[in-house]
Length: 241
Image 1 (cartoon, helix red, strand yellow):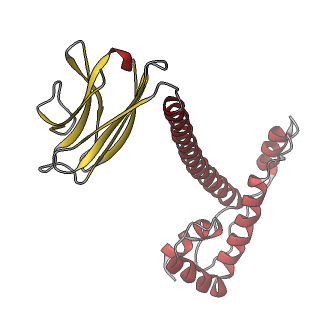
Image 2 (image 1 turned 180 degrees about the horizontal axis):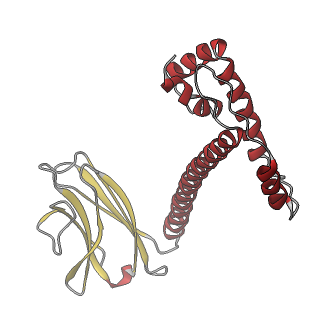
């Protein structure tokens, strides 16, 4: 067997090998007593290292071990097809492997936890926006107005002066050509104010707008990606006053 197979034993014990490597190590362990012994010791080491209920070693343990090492005659290892690693080295290797595996698991958990938090934030934001839209539409003075979009589709505006808020719903039949995008505006004191810039290819949006009592109109334009500071090609306009 090659040295590469020997070196895979630690990863094999931690289930960190692919199917081909696992099959190679399985076959090798049936033939190699030395690696079988290593695998057994590594499994025991990882089991101990993974145990969350470690006991605190006695304070004199280190001194006792060092004293025993100093007075113990070192016996040469028996010859074999390969030099056996000292038990301490295997334990250290196992400890390092477990630390790496634990770190990887922690990183994966952290990423997954962040994704859950992100998804929860998106869901909460969507729920808050839906509640706000419902509140505006349920207002006793709500006014609905709509206008067709040039090129197909429609923009609808619902606004309430009591709530001082409005909802702009735009649904186009197709996205603008040449990678351009839709941009929504309100006109306040004669000045267009950007309310939302859609992404490339996006054809619909629902936007809640605060301070609608100060807006005299709502418009939709076609702009370069990222939007423009002022409308360039207007495709719909809705009067609110």
